Image (cartoon, rainbow, N blue to C red):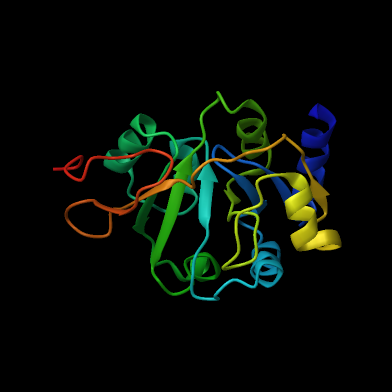
Length: 193
């Protein structure tokens, strides 16, 4: 499996797309700064063109690439594993990521998730939608992902069955944070009050 993660670095640096375990479910991963690879995932998933992907990061420095104001938000991300934070992002440079919504969702991956963390540190932030065509069940095992996507994926990394809820999503688009989706981490409705 270590060799798979080494191969993943090469594939992603060359504009490829992989299916690999994330901190929640299997995801389809590509470098967030590679517009062609991001667009390829939209086609592979049959994803609604107006729905942005979550971006996985490992540190505050990763947010700097997207010119995000992040001090308060990042401290919340550190406290909340498996929580994706939606933040304002209106830069035209990133329109292929925010899809005109002028917002991006980020999730901090901790060093405890050794392989994924190392991959992001090596190749940069990754888009990471769940490994399924839009509207279908997430792939809980690599065989499910292969049934969905076959040869459209450049590399599959098998990590057994991953039956988890997707990440919890919190929006920081207004003055008060709002829980958009309860997922892997169940937050009380008054958590941010």
